[in-house]
Image 1 (cartoon, rainbow, N blue to C red):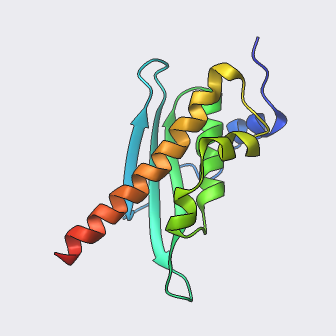
Image 2: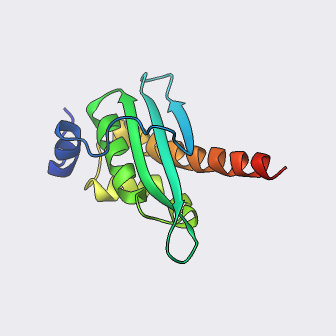
Length: 133
């Protein structure tokens, strides 16, 4: 039997930042073929007062188990307002720790959430380079 922390249940039953961003700066979709979880992460990048690029908004659409939805919700909370560099350092362990742990069989969900965020930022950086050319 798997037990979820109070924090996982909170993010599963009342997920934060769920939905799409209109005209996102980038989108990434990741999935796990073994469990069937699919996460789509949207990011909106803007510049702060210092001129540094930050994640102004982060939203998700996830089809999957409670842990997949909770980790998607948590990654958006962790990333929102961060610089791109700071957001790239957010790890699966950060997600899991903020959720007060996940059952061993569900740890892969924190991996998917971190992977989705990193892929979205990488996609944004690729688009930026293409625009410069």
